[in-house]
Image (cartoon, rainbow, N blue to C red):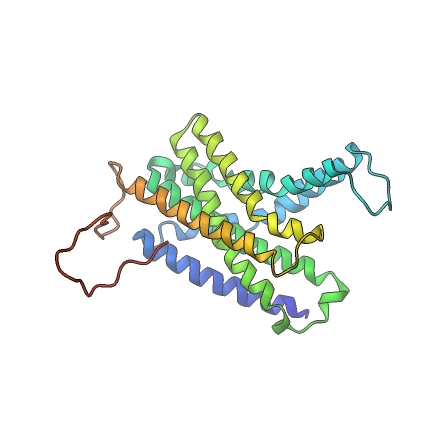
Amino acid sequence: MPGIYVMAVITIAASALLWGGILMGMSGQGKRYLWLMIPAMPLSALVNLLVKAPLAFGGGWLFKIPPNTGSDPPAFMVFLFLLAPVCEEAIKLLPFVGHRVRAYLDHPVNALWAGMALGIGFGLGEAAYLAWGIAQSPEYSSLPWYLFTGYAGERMMVCLAHGAMTAVAAGGLQRGGWHGLQGYLTSVTLHALLNVGAALYQFGVISVVAAQLPTLAAIIGLVLLFERRLHAAMGKPGAPDTGEEVIYFQRESKPSHQQPPDDV
């Protein structure tokens, strides 16, 4: 068995436990949102095999790329760069078509947590799909599992990023109207920014180490954006009770020995 499969099992299990546990703990709703990870898991394989691959093939024909030239027109490269954000951010919202999932759009808080769960589930499925693709390459299929630590670290962080991006889009859907389109386009833009480092590395502009910096910066920005929108949503009437009091600002007259709450 290819070593990447062993690392994929470890990565997916660790990511599900980590982000799923944080989702349960911070939402204060137990398993209410956790099950949403399940219907999102096969969406990565579906969008890659049934949508992105045919569109990439059709794009090559549309841009009239000569075979075996070794170079692609800039317009086609931009098309490929935007293909993943546009298609993936759309399919991650597909479960909201169902009545049971659409019920989570009753309040901004529920929408954000539901989007987070769907995005994490998509990220777990994407980790499995990428592992399958890596195993098809003779160059990597014979490597031992412990050499894929880079894959493990990246996939764990990307799961969180997918969750934050889908939460932003779900928040727009909850507001309705043009806000839905705005939320989707915002998630597409954030996804594109997340992929900038990898794209620049593939073009030979930066090193593999430098390529991690834009990705890390984008993930931090996504987490901060999610936290900001969550706090704003929790201040609206009808917010679900998490069982904990949320304090946005507190002036202390005496030094406190309590540790500050962790960020999202």
